[in-house]
Length: 429
Image (cartoon, rainbow, N blue to C red; front, side):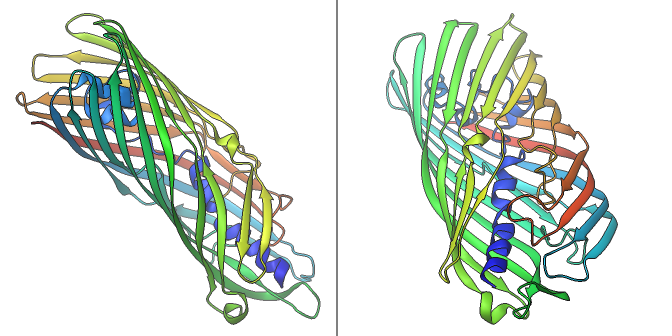
């Protein structure tokens, strides 16, 4: 019984790592930067929303400013030819199931963002941001072939970051911030009913497990901006990893309800992010920019789960560091209108052998465009649009990984893409 509970708990909470490791680290924090596919986001500092990537850029903004925006993220992910082989020791009747075409398993959502900055003097500028840096939801039919691997996965985060920027010289600015992050997960999957007499499971009987957990933890942010000339600048930004310890409970809906419900905790480290950007004004009309980003998912080495009824389990993981490249250009039509465009390459952190139906992600290409309208010296409006085309993802779980013994094998093909629309309003006091 304890072994089955351990496997169920591991399978249920594992979505936290999958959600974050498979490209749901939301870059969509600035409508202006999105128009360039986030090229130059670390060096551009075109409005205060760029402070999410580099707080040092706040020194370029005088007086007091506010930016409020939101991003509509509409992913599409369709599973085809899902085939499961549920073979568990002690089960004399393994189940072979096909789900065929499951349709769309993801849902659209809105990610808000807000920024404030205030210049104290010629050297110091203060800032504050509110962001949703991670978020996702996938939902399958409760009877689909891969239900032992997951039926519902929902992760939400909110991060508040107070920042300070210091202009060390006429060319060099430095910045720092404190990431105060709240994360919540709601997860669900099917599980088998244990057979106390044989030590295996009861053929044909299932239960449903649901987990909810949350936590609040703190990290930091650093940045530097160097202005080589009035037309050319370079930036570097770093967002630290945050070590989370989620606390919550597992609840079962059926036969296991009275015996298996318990409080649990799980340690999860969100990755560090390093970005390097460049920005250059070619002339009064044209500007070009580029960005390089590295997300250190390899810091996620294991998942440890403990329960108040003696549950203690460690699961080894195999995430890998990922790279993000982007280039972009802007054209200033006149004193009010600016047009933007960009292209990016974004790697997935999960290889085919570890990809799960929780987040069936793959390598992606970004195609972005945007427009800025400056109404007057106080009001500026930005809109950015991105289409992300992902490679076809394949799930090939052969039941050999730690924690997969109670879930069986699963093979499925996925088609993924994403439409993103962002808008923001900037006001100068």
